[in-house]
Length: 218
Image (cartoon, rainbow, N blue to C red):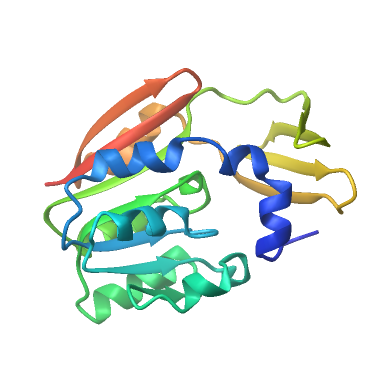
């Protein structure tokens, strides 16, 4: 299965990730959110935007190149607009239209899109002092494929991941469903700082193998 599955299949396959507390942890880094314009990059199934709406944001722009992952009720929300774009295309659109955000976030997906060019574009669409928060992994994956097996809600899952030529390859399997494969860049912590510090003051918060970043626009 290439690309991303629809909402129901995505939730079924990635149940372990959707049950984690990382969305709430990112929202805490972004507070106060009241009456801010919120940018949800690689929004997936919309968990960050739902939490931001509960914090009384003014409006959200949700960006994802695979909009079928988003539940129908989120697409109809009066508080959010969906942009079925890549991150680079969305940032270019916002810059051209002079749309700016006080808050931006990316949950578990920054390794798909962050480059020197997109870092500069993100800076351009944020207001002075605006906050960008994201989470990612901070340990280099092994080149030898690593297999993780576990059960959730009575279902068996298997994950296989490995590093090859700078890219992390990941296979997600749940019994009864076709596998989903994806790949994204390995970006070490020092590289995140190199990419972001020309534009943001960067704070890294480590929690084991996971890092949360709070980046304030300079």
